[in-house]
Image 1 (cartoon, rainbow, N blue to C red):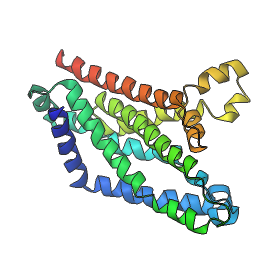
Image 2 (cartoon, one colour):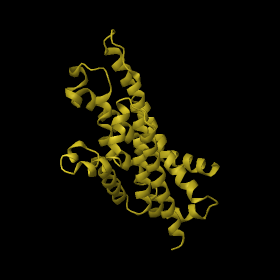
Image 3 (cartoon, helix red, strand yellow):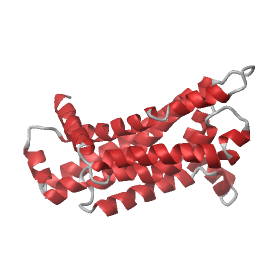
Image 4 (cartoon, rainbow, N blue to C red):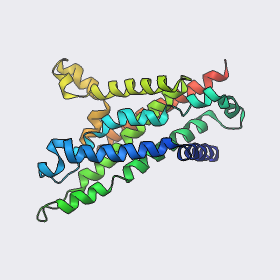
Length: 246
């Protein structure tokens, strides 16, 4: 685990020594509150509802583009610059390198979510004093947002490991994530047979997230996101291992 921590620290330094991390944080912290206050259900102040549903409902679509922007260079840049060969010759296991890189992206995601916590205080401030804010759905929503974002980051790390082109990695992550989002959208249920839709929706990122930000913290939802993370990190490790035999 010490080697994974070293990779984590190195990647984190790379992010914060370049504009990439700051651009991600600034864009996220501008767009997400803007959507919450202006678009979600005609805006927070017009809806007269003291919750963060309007914030959470747009997160999957923000993560669809912002998370791939974080991960697209995580392995692709190593291959393009030729430093991947040096990394692979070091006394570091493939899973340690994969885990360290992944955790650096997760840390950046966590920073972004923490910086949106002032929205909670805004909701609490403007809520009806006779009707206290229910913090249960808010806490579950943040847990769900972290798990869903981490899942997309794991997809992005794998996509970056299979190509040397960062744009290709970005697009591949967006496509896979988009497919995992739309398979659980209710409108798809109007087209597909109910039984088929019920099965497909269980594989959707949105389905499990919606139940969380509505205040239901179910073990199967947590298990789903953990399974997605482990699966794509496993693919990432296998991709890295396969290049050693070429």
